[in-house]
Image (cartoon, rainbow, N blue to C red; front, top):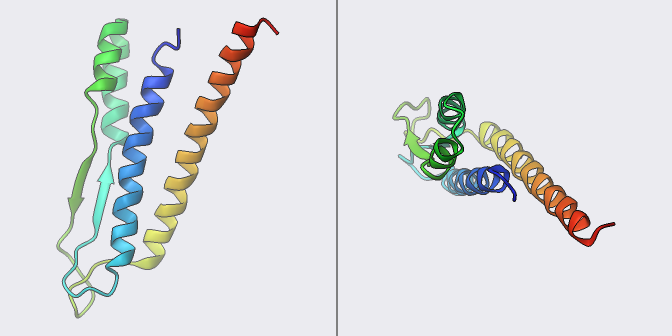
Length: 124
């Protein structure tokens, strides 16, 4: 009934939640000597997997691509600070806002889809 829309949104929301956790952890450790910034990525890999699956025109392949998608957590060892910490508050706050807006947009999209189906079911 929902196609792949809800499944895609669910997977994206999970990944965005994990991304937000990493950002919060980075900000919490901004003054911890030697702490290395963690970043969560999934968007580009997710996009490539969905494009490859959609080229097959198989709903099963698309569903498998969605279900099999996950995020990756990485960190870099470089640092410009004396204490070897590489967290930049400006970068983290910008990323937090971007992630929150993306999360909010997806929630609104899912809510809108569900309301549309409710209206159709009620026949209004």
